Amino acid sequence: NQILLQLRVCLDHVSRLAICGNPTQLSLFQGMEIRDLAYAGSRKLQALNVPIPERTAAIRRANEFPELTLPDACDVIIPPAVHDEVGADALALVIQSGILDCNETAIAIDYGTNAEMVLSHQGRLFTASAAAGPALEGQHICCGALAMPGAIADIEADGKDHRLLVLDDNMLPASGALINLSLATEISASCESAAKAITGTGVIAALDQALLAGVMSPPKINTPDRRLHFGREIFLTESDLGEAGKAIGAIRAGYVTLGVEAGIVPAEITTAYLAGASGTYVEAKKSGRLGLIPPCVDKVNQVGNTSLAMARDLAFEPSKLEKMTDLSVSLSQTHTMFATSDTFSKLFLLELSRWTEGMPMETHREMLHRFHLPDIPVMERMPSILCSMQRDIGHLGLHGLIALESVGKEVRLQLEGCVACLSCITACPADALSIDTTTHPASISLTHARCNGVACRRCEPGCEPKVFHLSDFFDEKRVAANREC
Image (tube, rainbow, N blue to C red; front, side):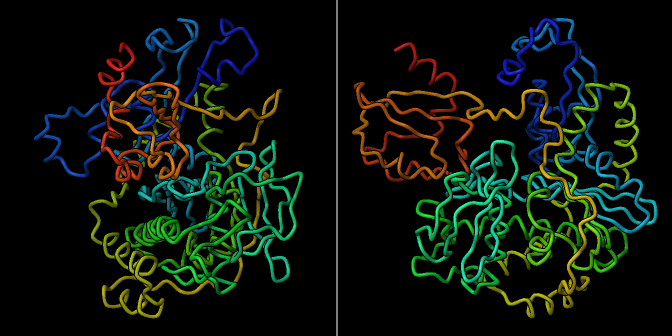
């Protein structure tokens, strides 16, 4: 609804809305069951009596979505899913990337929380989704943010120091401050491209440059304060390194597992298609050195936000929904669920040992041999970039890019017994909390879109009177009762 208000047209004139995303996103949009997506097996679902909905393609009317501010007769285009954790965004990756027309053995990866990947080998397509977590999108990172103006998107060596590349208002990387990774200061500032946070591609670039500079050896950061610095107030911690390492490890374990399913080794993959913001803005050589793309790839296509491009195509040509449906049926036959894959389990265990325990790569490769898994050679040559997009969003429209600062709702609660110690505010890594001390008791506000959820809960332990409970801010009855008071 917030996006619709930015169109600068009468909403009565909107005749078609197309959406694209993963199964959870599209299910939430339609008000469908999502608990079935939380479990890999069927026993738990049967015990909980959870119905499994059909996630097929549909063209519905806007009046079926009571809260949607569009005319009742407006068509809403909803694409299908492939499997539990692989949805319309994976279909978009296949169609929009161009992998269907590739004759070589190729991999397409959409870097994100659910790292969808498609392997093409001898005319067959193999799909999967790696639970990489949100680190490669700049989330669950202390000073992280999604790709938006002001976010550090890349870091380049500049003599003995490093230069930040910061996204400008048109989502293009612009030259930023000159920094020293070991020091919380700027050697020279940039008035035009001041950094506000670091996004996923910036995290990848930072880890790559820190390894080359010798100031990082996972899981340790070898600086005086154990942080990598990008100016006075932006940094990466060893905890951030662990989050990013898990994401990188999940993706590498993923494409090696898909290769095993296809009967090939990683060295046979020669072409890669990189999608999403992380696939667009980060340099392929930096991704390659960290293991985010197969080691012997010699051609890389950076294809941008394929999910958004697919939604745009569906809005103009709803007939493309049929192609997505046919493809979803085909891909479901060769889908691999990593949650139940013994191969993926072993590979990811080794990746965790490397990133969180410091296992040397020599030992890593010895363990691969012991587990009868394919070797992962060292990247010896840099791939060529065949089609590098300037930004992940190809079409900015007539009025340019408008980035929503706040998505979702803000919940405000007065907590009886709160002494305004501010421990919850200072502990929050996502700047999701604020406090109003003019009320009695003090009012705490939580912005849902910024909160990392119950998997984080760093806000709770420091509360002196023990009255702050994160779950209260997601309890509709509790919020409604507090509002009435």
